[in-house]
Amino acid sequence: MMFRLKDLNILGSKAELAALPEGKLLINTINAHSYNTARKDELFAEALTNGDVLIPDGVSIVNACRWIKAKSQPKERIAGWDLFEFEMNKLEECGMKNVECGVNGEECGANNSSLDNSQSASADHSKLKIQNSKFRERPLTVMFMGSSQKVLDLIVKRAAEVYPHLKIVTYSPPYKPEFSEEDNKAIVEAINAADPDLLWIGMTAPKQEKWTYSHWNELNIHCHVGTIGAVFDFFAGTVERAPIWWQRHGLEWLYRLLKEPKRMWRRYIIGNTLFLWNMLKEKC
Image 1 (cartoon, rainbow, N blue to C red):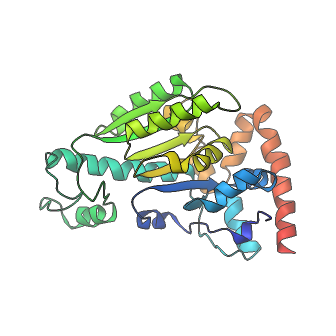
Image 2 (tube, rainbow, N blue to C red):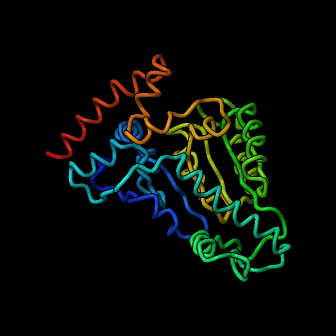
C-alpha cells in the first residue's frame, strides 16, 4: 500500500499529549524527511502507520495536511523536544509526590491537600498511573537507549540537575548499520531489566522507529516509548537547538542547514523539494 500523508492519523495539538492513555504506548514523529524516507522504505512506513501515536514534527507536515485536505488536520507543530519536555516534567512531578508521600501506595496526585487550585488542576492533568495506579517501591525510572556513551553520560549529568527525582538508566548500543541477533537480544534484555517508567529511543530515523516497531512485542514494559533521535543531543548539549524565534516561525530546519550545511543540504534542499512534489501528487 502506498504511504500517503492524507491517510495518516496525526496528533492535532500539544494539548492532546495530556490525553494520551497510560501504559505501553509507542510514540513516533513525522516530518518531511521521514515522510520521504517512508515512501521508499516499507518497514519504516509500516512502523509510522502502525505506531500508537504520530506527532507532526514539522511545520511542513502541518501546512501540507491542510493543503491536501488530509484526514488529520494538526493545528500546530509538536517537536520531539515538546514531547520530551512534557513526558519528563509529568514524570518528575510524580517523582516529587513519590518522595512527599513516602512511597506509601497512594495514587499519583491524590490526597495532597497542600496543593492550591492551580496546582491541583496541573496535577489532575499530569496524573501518571504506574502499575495499577500505584507508586512503585523504587524511584521512577527513565531509560535512554541509543547514542554514544559520551552523550549518555552528559544526559545523566544534566538530568540530575533538571529532573532530580528521576532515576536515569542508559544503554549505548553498538555503532553499526545493522544489529546482530545478539545485539538485539542484549538491547531487549537491558530494557526489560530496567523496567522503566518512560523509555526514549534515540538512534536517528528510520533506524529507531524500525527497531522499536520490530521488537515491540519483546519489550515487557508498561510505559510510553518515544523515538526522538536528535533530542538526545539537544538535551546533552552536544548539538545546539535553534533559538526560539526560528522555532516559532517554522524555520528550525533552516537554522540547522545554516549550522551544518555539509550534513544537512541534501535533507533540506533536495528533500524539501521532493516533499513538495509528493504533496502535489497527493493533492492531485
